[in-house]
Image (cartoon, rainbow, N blue to C red; front, top):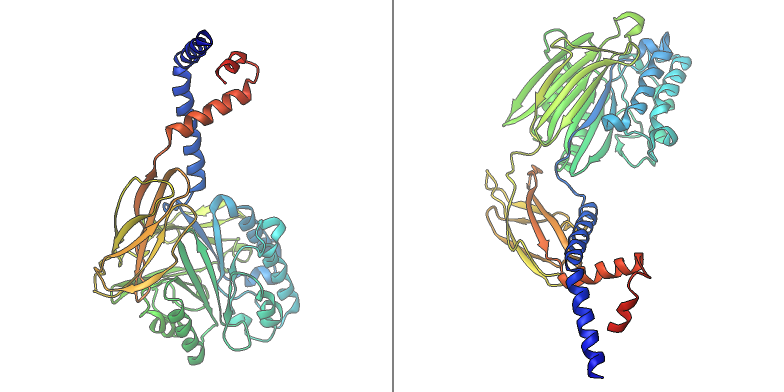
Length: 443
């Protein structure tokens, strides 16, 4: 009996010594494998690279004479959706050249329909887009072809003013960034402007884009009368950062600052070019993490870029820097299954009350909560149920909807050596079930 016990002890000891290096290697392999799984599980990186907004300027001549060029534009948008990360398309008005021509509306309908096709876009509701009347579209047929019924039920469609779709808005989200685009009818009346005012108040937590057919004159970039009225309505909202228009030919832009908030207004209209416009459109590549919009002008029809300074330029804009990120303090390591406390503090430059949003890195988030006084420390706790490294993220926004960037704190739930050892041996024995018959003497 004693000799049997000694034999078992010696053999088990030799096995452990012999495979010691492999055990350590297995531990590292398992640690890496679990780490990789944790990285996949916690793929909530705040560093969004970029996304793209497309502006479709006046398509009136395409609808009347060159419908294939209109279709070429929308087919190109669909084909580039993933590579350019196209999240929204804004038609700037003058869809048709003759508002009474059913044929022209039918051609526009055909071209725009490519944006809506789930099969080709890979999206259940198609690519989010908005469309608005220009002076050439005034009449009843706009709502026959692009009325409320066409958009109702699409997840991105926000709503409309009154019973028509002549003033409407859409919502779209890109990672942690949230946007609204309001399209206003050609020369909107006071009631429509009041409606836009209410929509912006209600969505003050979203960065806002305004689209209307007539905003700027060319080449001066002066306001048109409708543009001046629209700007005076929306300028008080710090979340409005971009306005888009067509109507007056060629290109112009202006930048206005009101109460510290900047709005860029861009005019693009190529209808006087050959072939009704040669298919030129605007590509606006938005980089939220560096607060830039890279604007390019491209024709899918010609497969060419316009590279002059009026057609290719970069805009700076504020994605919420008015509100600094909060500070996060607390343990950077913890224990699985044990609740850990963290402190969060946000200082608002104007002393406004602030709301918080916390993402714990394990698919659990708090949603917006508050408000709290500026500088007031709040304490929240969380329990992680699995080992790994998690990126705790927190951001703040003030009562006016100005959001900060994310504050980050990596937190590690340490790995268990016992668990790693057992997982390694289970994996080894599963892959080589007949390799270690002598292990039976250790049982």
